Image 1 (spheres, rainbow, N blue to C red):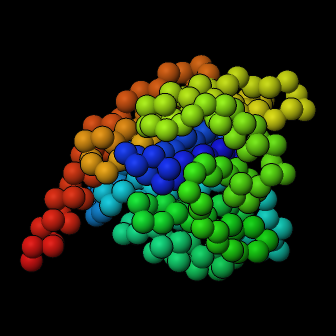
Image 2 (image 1 turned 45 degrees about the horizontal axis):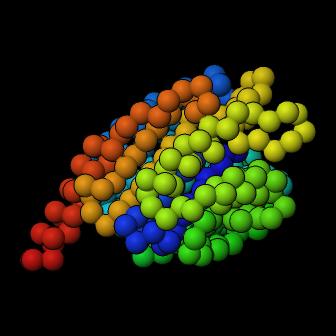
Image 3 (image 1 turned 30 degrees about the vertical axis):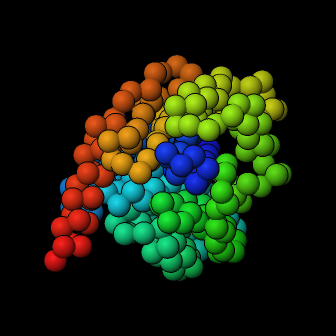
Length: 257
């Protein structure tokens, strides 16, 4: 499970704004965000058990995220959803990542998952439950957890929407400031929806805030290595700006040849 909010194409200075909480078993090891080798360059955390990731950005400004979801299946899954997430970060566009995700999830080799694929040109969610389908993101706030995108039946999604929209999110600074508080909201009493989840053996294990502007120097990447109500966000923005600058240089060089 996870909770992922994307404010898309609403703020001219930052077309992509992301807030995400990751839920996992506490004993499952992971590594904080780092630049991965190979091309395109990717900034993401790593699941040390399977080698995949849950959220990342590549040098083309493509954001890929995955949320687990329920799925009735008669076959035993043979591939990690996080590994597919990491593979999708090799794409050069959200459309290409969407198509690869659709093809892979249709193979039946994965447990249920929702894949978010978004760049400056388009934004998509691939629902990989009992049926495989894709939904285009609308301009504004899009939120997903373990059901469909913007599902009004998902109490956790609706809670996050209500808390985020109490404020006017018309700049990257405002979005990140509000999201850092909303996504760090302590666990609710049992039986009620909760932003931070804290159960006996699993719960919220990390949180990420991302802002992608029109220029690499404006990009922001903040990461909390545990539940954000107990741990501060640390700044990884220089790493994100580095890979985006590399991507821009390579694109400019290619355009001249």
